[in-house]
Amino acid sequence: MSKNVKLGGGGKFSRRGFTLVELLVVIAIIGILIGLLLPAVQAAREAARRMQCTNHMKQLGLAVHNFESSTGKLPPLDLNIGHATILPLLWPYMEQTAIYDVLENWRGANDASSGFGQDLCRSDSGAGDFFWRNTEYMTDELRENFSAVPYVKCPSRRAGVAGAPLTNTGLTHDGVTMNGLKSIASYGPFADYAPVIYTTYKSPDCTDFQWVGGEDTSYALSAGNFSPFRRAKIEVAGDERTWQPRDAMSRWVDGTTNQFMFGEKHIPIGMLGSESTAWRHDQNYLGATGGNGRDWAIGRAVAESCPLASPRDTTNPHRFFGSWHAGVVNFVMGDGSVRAISTTAYAGTLGKFAHVSDGGTESLD
Image (cartoon, rainbow, N blue to C red):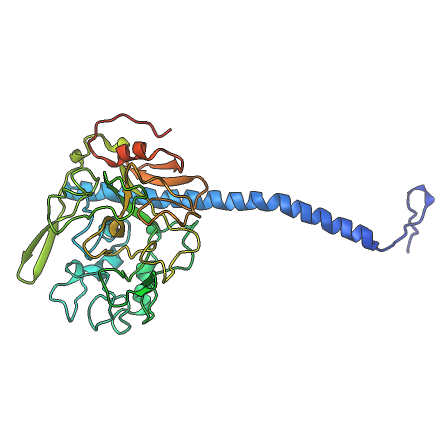
């Protein structure tokens, strides 16, 4: 049995469509709300990415301390020009033992040395050796594994750019093709973090500062006795090449809380993985080289004339530290903590946190 239901007041419910004006008003209101909400959503996403970046860098700091606890020494800056840098040497202490073992057990047909005894940034494509562009021995799966280590990437910056291209045209700089020149082109996977190198060089634009130095030297130049990490002790006997870490943590006379270890590399927006700028900004982190072991190819410099760079700064050279986080650059301190340093921080103050024994008292706040 059905019932008739009356609307309040005895009136009847009437239907009518929106007029064009009313529809436009509704659309405008929705657009305004989206416009108000979008920046908040983007800010929340960036905050999450920055937190993840901080966590990645904390893993680097933890790996250094685990390395030191295991060996009694600090990890080395590198194992000589073109050979392994500090980042792959830390893999076993970052849950990346499997990919570390691939490097350590690699046998090259054209290189008497094996594993970390090899040049890890060769730009040619010879069979058997550890060449990034070697399509016979270096498979796509291996390249993907080397590029997928999460703790060397900033999620605010690195999305989809795994490593140097495999083209035959090679990397170029200022119109000069660098293909086949291992002293310039550095083929391999990319990273967003780099070890800190202290330098006293005072070029007005911080360009072309000094060399890291040859194998097992005194480090009298920019890497000197003042950077947090130095090259390993190398021993060569016949075809065998071995290395040992050089320094104990006690070398950081100023204390771990006053010491920079790693920072975010300056890579301008729009220049990730670009063939025309890979030599200047993006670098293979396995065994980066710059011909004679230039500092910028292995790490980044902190010096009086080297301020922190902003994400869109394409004028500052590749020697700087910089991030894609608004207004700050993350640094890993010697105690394993991560500090967000303002891009306006005075470079001279930053230099004191790169120097292991300057004895100065400074504040980053």
